[in-house]
Amino acid sequence: MAMKIIQAECTSCGDCKPVCPTKSITDKGSIFKINVDTCTECDGEFDSPQCLSACPAGEACIVYV
Ligand code: SF4
Ligand code: SF4
Image 1: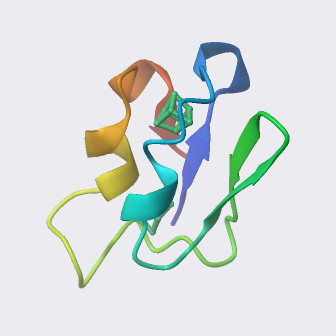
Image 2: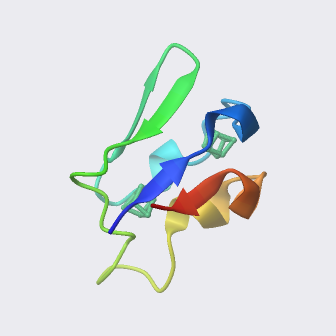
C-alpha cells in the first residue's frame, strides 16, 4: 500500500514533502517521488493520505498505487 506522484501533473511545489509522517517523499532537483517501500498511506497516523490533502493538484497528481 502506497501512493504515487504522477509526474506530468506535479508542479514541484513541495507542499507534500513536509507533511509526510514517514518521510517517504524525496525530491531530486524538481522531481518529487514517493518511496513505495516506506509509504504507509498514512495508515495508523491519519485518516487519509496527508500528501494528497496537501497537494494543490489533488487526486490528479497523487494516486493510490
Ligand atoms: S500517503 Fe502518507 S506516508 Fe505515504 S507519502 Fe503520502 S504523506 Fe507520506
Ligand atoms: S504537493 Fe503535489 S504538485 Fe506539489 S510537489 Fe507534491 S505532488 Fe507535486
